[in-house]
Image (cartoon, rainbow, N blue to C red):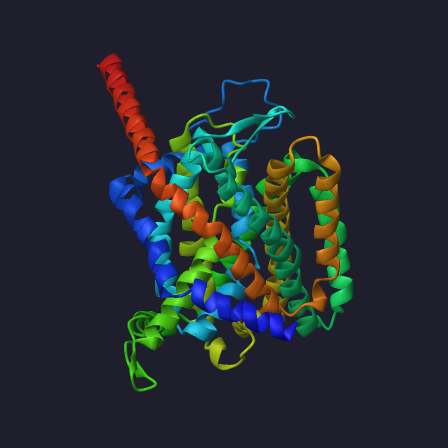
Length: 468
């Protein structure tokens, strides 16, 4: 296992190197310019169709196909996809980024996520435009579908699906659970065996109920856990408000640290910061990874652009709110100077202000975050496996769910470092095919976007004429 981990780590150092990070950023920048800085200049529009909907200002736009019983609402699609993003990576992954990449890793998370908003928008637009109807009276779609139907590249879709199934097993089945087990063992001395088995039982109850049950759980769980984490995190930050200025100074100064390292290698410190910040940020919000479009394709929303806006909202909440709070909590409390275990940094930060209550809260939140991610990742892998095998191979889908549950139950047997390396490897096998596909289909995305703006403008003009 040690030898295998070493090989995987060496591969990841190459695949997650500067060239890949620059390419990921390029795709986000490409769509930002192609779509006229939509995430900034049209902020009022996308907040109206996302945040505004569940404040009651606007109703959900449903598909005209009323017989599609297994579709879910746009909000459910977003919370289920967000459940896959808002996992222990928002706590442990961000902690690892700050620990190994320095405070500047937060800057590169923000930088990557700003452009990643438009990558998420683009892949969601394609997911709705090219989705298919399944035999179970619902939709299904995602990168594997638009790779086949729009790009006409079936083998690339197969590569994506295989990698997604592996991510579902390793990230959904192992990473989340092992992080929870470590936190419970360090904080309360609870055996990892007991924790893992308890989580496995809870997961089995939900994932065998299909997407409707998963969505009904995540639409309640994700808003609750996100608000609870934000409240606790802001409490920690405000109690150390005098250190907040220094934290931001360290973030920006460390982000552009181009000092020579090792004599002849200029900028290694900055490249390391960029790698950890961008890589962990991308893994966290999943922009370009291709997983969240699988969930968004199930939405009852008939308009691709409107569902694409939920992708922007998803990245905003995941990175600019939740990940930022994690990083700032660590920096203002100096937790990165107390422990070298990424699993414990946020725990230390919360405990320094909230005492034993903070330790209990972070463990509870780890359970909720991890649980929602397990559900989302398991379903994403299930859909990809179903795409390869077809609708008739239900026994293999059930076997896949059993494997997920077994991986959860025995997750304590693997070290988190090893699992992270595997996740990074399979993630790159999903992300690169998806990003290349988005670039090749960018004209179609821009066309759909312009058509939406034209129809919206005409509708608004007609409305104003009637009022006049």
